[in-house]
Image 1 (tube, rainbow, N blue to C red):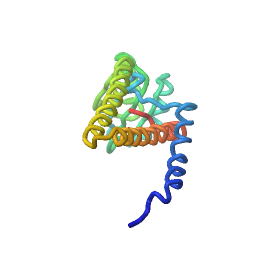
Image 2: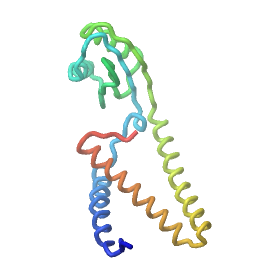
Image 3: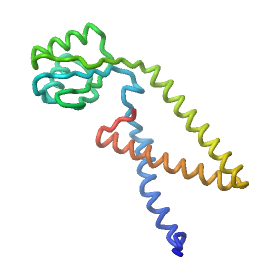
Image 4: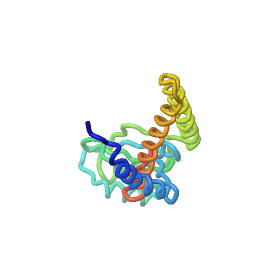
Length: 179
């Protein structure tokens, strides 16, 4: 039998090396929320001709549209995430894009308000706390010992901190968004 506990100092060291920079990043940089939390518009366009992301971004910047990202969703299809735009501005943008790139097919256009984002965040935190308490209670009841339930809840908290810290670092250095 292998004595894994003999190396517990190594496991704590590895865990600390991951969690501490992540926590520092969370407090210093925070998380980079997507439009699901901040509000904005998503616009997916299909093109007949080849289009470069930089050229599409240039046109949107000329029209003073704050774009958070432009990603390819398929062959000659792009998803543009941006601050909220009105219908009139969308029609003007589409006309200008068609003038520069040829025929454009509008696959979808969605607008999300920031109130929905706050509501989603509150519901997420509520669900996380409720799930942790229910896991704690169930494991404590099943094993007839509260220390098992507390250990399971702490392990879940540990894993959550690893994920949140990682996304904070990835958001700051590579632009990853939380959605």
